[in-house]
Image 1 (tube, rainbow, N blue to C red):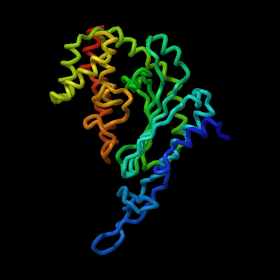
Image 2 (cartoon, rainbow, N blue to C red; image 1 turned 90 degrees about the vertical axis):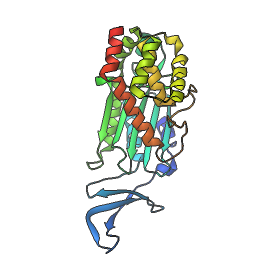
Image 3 (spheres, rainbow, N blue to C red; image 1 turned 120 degrees about the vertical axis):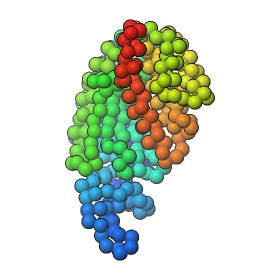
Image 4 (cartoon, rainbow, N blue to C red; image 1 turned 45 degrees about the horizontal axis):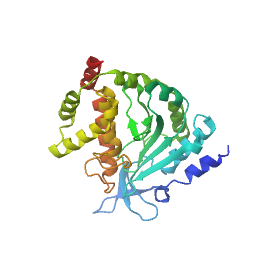
Amino acid sequence: MSLSNDAVRLLETFPEAANFNPVKVAARNPVTGDKLDGKFHVLHPDTNQWLHFCGAKDRRSNFFRPVEAAVRILDHSGKVDLSRVKARYHLAPDFTTLKTEFLLGDFEGKRKYDLALNDPVGAVATIYDSHNATCRRHAKVGVIRLLCANGMIGMDSQAKTARRKHTTYDDATSFGEQIADFIEGLDIQIAPLLNLQKAIVSRKSSMDFIEEQLKPSKADFEKIQAIYDYYGSMGSTGYRLYNTLTHMVSHGLTTNVNNTYINWKSGTRNGVNAFLSSMNYEAKISKIINGLEFKKLVEVAA
């Protein structure tokens, strides 16, 4: 089936530098020159830059494939207005990892969210991929707070993730279909967010919790307090603590919400490890939000 003009427009934003097919070549013993059985090097096709060392079953495909599949499926699903979708791409300087974000301005159930939370929301579909085993190819779909562009990390069963190993059959189409299905089920994330709005959590309890969980330096803790103050309109609630935590994933330790996908520690986009640092920190915050101590804090408060 052909793509709509909006889908074509969206795919045309894909970065040219990320659009390549990695090449596998047999690995050799550096001393004897003999081939290493079942071992391969993954190289950039244009520069021969070394990307990864892998086994025979490993499959590395163009970063474009799952992105194109997701756009194609969404285009024909009718669940998203692609004319209101914006794409952001974060390619590591060594071309080994890519994080793709589709910011969905409108989706099925959005009005239900806006009315229930009294807080305008959008949705974001994020695709992670790597050529060097930094991560499995996987996608997450969740809600994003439009006023600050915070990604709302899913809680327990509300978190929706699709994963693909690089050693299994590379079915980009079914991967895209899962993303579309996740968007259809976004409304199940409303209930836990409503509960957070109702939970009364004092500033002291919130700061004590953050200090215990993150153990930040004095300088970082002062920045975190400024972030907490930024969400003062939410009152002393679990929702305010939750947004403080997700803010750090989306914007780093700054109250400038125009800054996105920055290394939370350094506040920069630079460096090969920025992608991994961001992803690891997101996993850390997700673990905290879904952890027993956070649940105890907000449930007792509620």
